[in-house]
Length: 167
Image 1 (cartoon, rainbow, N blue to C red):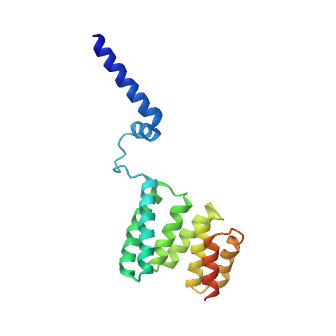
Image 2 (cartoon, rainbow, N blue to C red):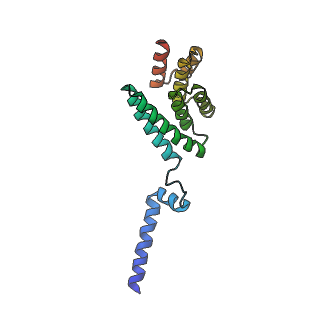
Image 3 (cartoon, rainbow, N blue to C red):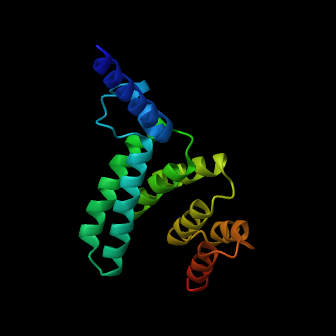
């Protein structure tokens, strides 16, 4: 009987250490099975972001068709993430970005603007919305996005500035 009590004590100590050392273990234990295979909004966003970054590299290599497929995959993941969190400007930014890359400028603009309502100084949204304005020949609006980025000492400012100057 004494041996059994010692084993139980060791197991309880081990479980306690798991809870103390790994907060995500606690969250998983408390939430149970969400039915989404462990794919929460952060994971969906991160997966989508990886697709976007891969697609950008493919575009630079003129592999446009493959890039578009990855943008489409990213867009689907972002839509799922958006359903779970409609107030994340990063999700809205990449939703706009993937739509813009697919040529759907009108819908892309809606997502960018929604993101700016949440975070007006979001560098990525301001840059990408400025790029959309350049693509749709609205240079004055692109310059307004550039003014928002002015003074950030960031690549988003430099890239948008160069795009506007080369138009």
